[in-house]
Amino acid sequence: MELLRLIVKKNLTLLVISVFLILLVFSLNLSIWYHIVPGWYYLILEARWGLNACLPLISALIIGLFIQSIAFTYEMFKTAIIKHKQDLDKLVKTFLEHLTESCSFVSERDITGEKEWISLSCPTCEKYKEVRRKFGKLVDDLGLHWDRVGELLSKIEEFCEKIDKYNSDLKKSFSEISEEGQRLLEENLRNRDLRKPQGICEFLRMFLPELVLEDFRNKRVEPDKNTIEKFYGKEVERENMGIRVGPVPMRGIDEKEWYKEYLPLLVEVTYDLLNSFKEKLNMHVSEGNEMKNKVEELSKELKECLEDIRRSSVLPLGKLCKYIIQDR
Image (cartoon, rainbow, N blue to C red; front, side, top):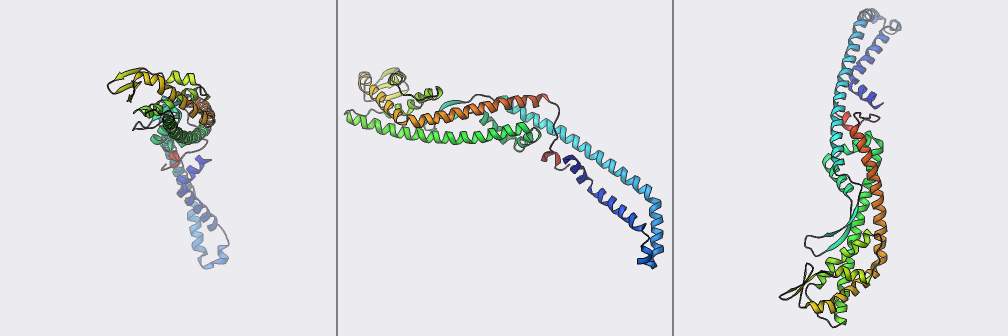
């Protein structure tokens, strides 16, 4: 139907002329003119005979122009379809190059290195946004020609927006956890009458998200002191002004103090901190895994559909997209 409308639109002038000639022939062949304008009747009669005599030639000319115009429109239409299919194939190829079904929880850090948090990394969403930026409206055309692909892309876009919001909420939660962790650490240092070594707050801020990351991947945050102590048991090296625990320098304490006072303190603070945020973190875990599973399911189906499109040499034309209609 849309193709028919396109042909009518491109041949509208010829259609108007044809209708005008039909109405003119019909009008001139009416005998009523003798009663309406008797003085002009013989002139109208001459015009009728002349037009009727030329009617076969005029009809042949109009039909010829119609055929030529339709053939020209068809040729442009065919060229547009071929070019459009090639563009869509490039889009599909680009999409498939990095389209993956797997999402994962990862730790992130800002450029200053002062803040760390966990986020849900979704390569499918990243690739979708990249393809959308690069190909623009062509992505919409892909969904227009293949209905199921359009539905999948809409659902993926919707879930990607949800994941962005989820990551934003998760980042805020880790900011709250980090602030509360610093407060608890300083409070415990005062209560135990321990000096605050330079680097201990950085140690907690750096390794806490990595510790929780394992729980996120295991789909349940369940604090355990032995696990925390084992995770914090980084290699200790002596330095001129203190020690280095893993990558973090600790100024003002020695190795013995670290193992006797500060490591148990960090374990205790982390355990209490995670217990106080356990319910909130597990809500994030549950929500994240639910979205993760759904996006992976959609990605798998989308990948299968795109593979079928790549193998196909036919462009479905149940609907005509703007690319084909415009300027044809």
